Image (cartoon, rainbow, N blue to C red; front, side, top):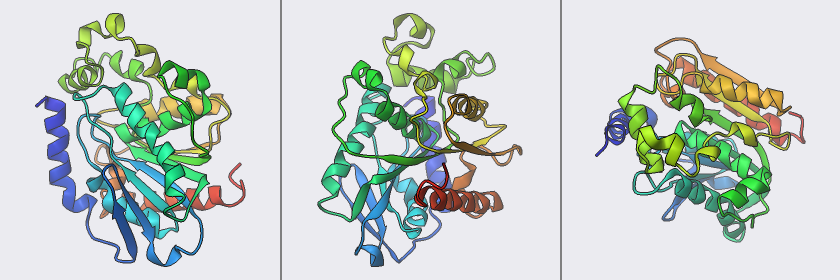
Length: 298
């Protein structure tokens, strides 16, 4: 087991009580192989807007079960929440992971016949690696050339109305070229795990190096985005700022929220017993209300 996988597995186990502190009994949960579905039991008489959530774990670890309580919180706000798994590196590469999350959009077409979901009102969210995948869906949905590059076709009628991103990585090239991080064994371990190429050979031998940064694929067709990040993030310091600036430069509606304290660090929103988490949940709920109100956010 690589150092990155071991680290993130330990993190999930140790943090379990804080991340999943209780159950919300009024929320119904249904599961299949790849996804858990959450919705408020008494709201099945009408079409519900959809939230797709992707867990973090450095691309090499993590599981949807560690985001149960977060998804219950979102479902209580009147959303149908899809909490998705994806295959983990190094068993697959990041390109196969991207294809896994793309398939979730295809599944929404099927879900409309089984659950009261509205595919024209979809929000995508994720933390850490999950934030990368959430943002990547926006890039795929709005860039036919990127879909072609990855061998994907668009067979869904999903309309994104918002994205909520927590402490993600959005530009691998910037992270790998950061002199303070490229010496990190954890970063090198992840880079090799997601590509299948030795770290020192990435630039020369990795065929998909050109699509590991989201920045070239941001355009004005992106939906409104809410970004959360930690200024002193242990793992992805500077990535939230990079994305925020890129979205602004391309006239994408965006709002940012961040922490400055070292103790309010990577994915701080998941520690629900803290004040900063409670504040973040309120900010997320406010964003969700705005984007549901007939384009009032725009």
